[in-house]
Image (cartoon, rainbow, N blue to C red; front, side, top):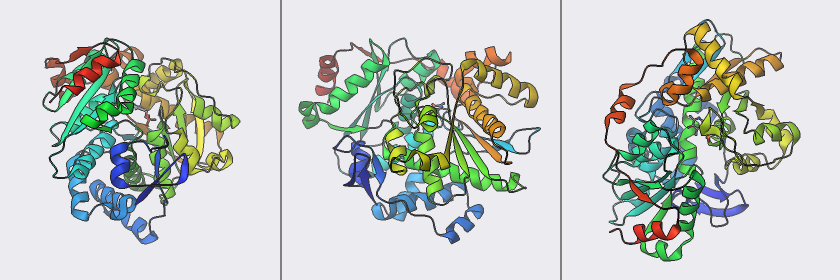
Length: 439
Ligand SMILES: *Cc1c(COP(=O)(O)O)cnc(C)c1O
């Protein structure tokens, strides 16, 4: 399988360089050159397969001959080690929640980060060269990357996070690994961390000495595995959706990687009727779907803060998939944005009606389904993606529903551990000096 760039459909890169570089040389994002439909016979066979078997069928479809079957099985076995249940909401027979938070760091980012880590390890192979990964995080991405790459041979990871700007538990999830994972606590804000990483990638001097690779959310190796759970959601819905209603899936979105992966699943022939692009007040995409005009802007802080993105990086991929035609995009996508008050009210109402505890991001997704229902007359089966465990947002959730959600053992254990981080200033020469002289 070859990959093209969103800036140039004629550009070509092989799997290895797409995965290791992250971004095309022309600054565009990688997309498969062509996305063909799965054969009808494969789609018919899906309901008899497990999640891992489905992952194998899809990975093979997307990566074709870039890796052999053994390597692919091995990557899947090592990365997709947890379940993805589709849970029916009590009292509702036409709405279900896809729980994407069962991985080691309790957010859906585990899927992409773990798969990417294993795929990169495969790309490095048995050479004794060491690859250095730099990643800037405002919370969730860093912990998923740290966990995914922990003790993966041949890879050293440096995570830059803004000092005092991540929650206590998030900080523990970044700073308690050790071994090949180093946390760099930056005196500054998230934008400083992102700038430092960018500068490092543009520094030829450093790149000559260190083999740098990017693990941020635009890496195609993070996007593709996210399409697997959409197919698994479809397969599980067949049991619940006894009236065979059209399937509508609401995706709580920030950088729109998750939603783009859903579009890939639809493109290969999985029968999703439509997707709801559900956002908080950071809403350039719902606005684009309404007006046809894309206006990126600075992000604003909300309680669903993993979606506080004013200029979504995967928008370029969405535009490329529809050749820039907003009307074509509208056939697959419907947008809606919600305020923090609406999100809190949704968490409260859902808990009172069904006993189900949503996190703020999942609440935005369920709002997306309910709003879609109100504005369309056709009956549908709604799937809301729950992207994080509610315990990760314990204060917001407790305040909204009046009780504290159960804290999973995994999270409680991390909280007990000792933090280890190296403090650096927000000046590039500090980071460079540190990286340059590391053995
Ligand atoms: C990252 C994140 C999102 C947003 O996902 P995108 O792929 O960036 O749209 C939503 N919810 C949670 C909990 C996240 O961590």
